[in-house]
Image (cartoon, rainbow, N blue to C red):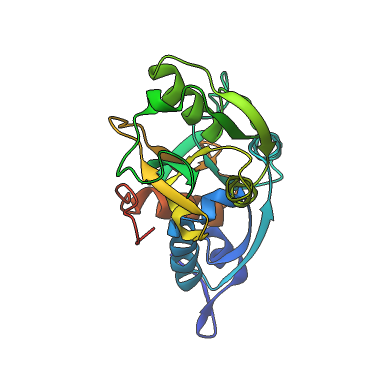
Amino acid sequence: PLRLVGSEMCIRDRVAVGEIGSLRLAYVGSAALGGVMAKIIHEFRNSAPNVELEFFEMDMEQQLDEIARGRLDGGFIRLPLPIGQTNFEQTVIQSEDIVVALRTDHPLAAETEVQPAALKDERFILTHLKPHMGFAANIHMVCAEAGFMPTEAHRARQFSIIVNMVAAGLGIAILPGSMRRFDFPEVVYLPLAGVDLCSEVALIAMPEPASPAARNFLELAKSWKLYDKTQKGNS
């Protein structure tokens, strides 16, 4: 039974149930674009207003190291994790379609959708990640299924910079559908024909959270209804 001090639970009991404490979370920049991360954090804040929240923008590999060392309670990333990283619990919170970003004067820009094979001879603006992890893995899977490897023109750490490079005519890019939020007059985002692959945003954490507050946050993420593919104009 909970012990009461006056009309409130004592601090120790409130910590034990996760009503007070602290939570340290990291995120990759693109994980926030779809909006679900913010909704989960908002719901948690309403349920536990006395839990102190700290946020850090951080690359996936650094997140994995910090979570494993106990310096972070969790992180929002884009799957897949690097090969061999099997010690983390993954909770998918959003699944997005994948699009190609083209400059408006590109020969394919007037199409309603683009066959991936039509991009074989294009120069790609890629993310900074290795080909087997995060959204970089999605790019390489789309191209591999179409029978080619993407030719690199440039790399960038942020999707917003990649879109700017597309607008500048430096190449094309395969991106998650939430990038439609970046409405550049010089850029169009088109579906990729026949591509069922999605980009998944997930909360990663250790299987046994270090604190009750962290456990509650993870349980909230698990209970969150997975959003279906991001819809154009509502992403």
